[in-house]
Length: 141
Image (cartoon, rainbow, N blue to C red; front, side):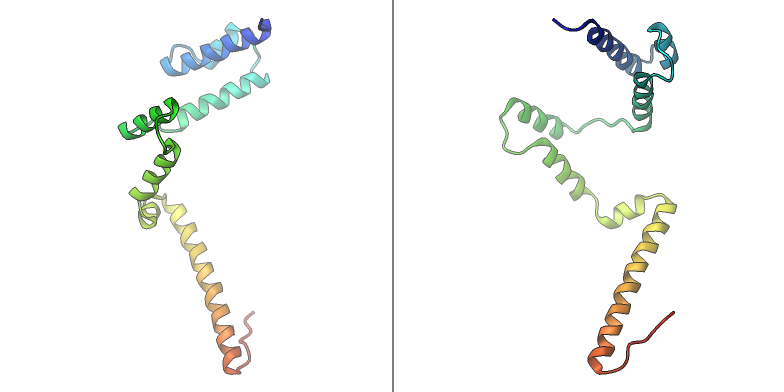
């Protein structure tokens, strides 16, 4: 037999999930209904769940993914759905396309990181060539 506090928690979380999906009740109303303070750990976790729910864009899975997930759950497939999803994700976009889809500030940061790597690689190559040719390495401050 389940603990009454576990049943209470399951009811609370189930009602919270339903209120998120159907937008029937706010978090404050739900906390007041169950007499929970906003500082309680469960309230903080529910707030995090709301932020994730509203912050992550909702997408509809492709029919191929749904079918492969069904096959995986039923046990009739040799390829896991997660691997199929990752493969589709990587094949549909090139690294340049991913770079173009980044926000401008991320593009600048990625460009600076790439420029830093190129600079470090070229300095090492320059110093190795100087040592090979017998010239002293160029010291920069």
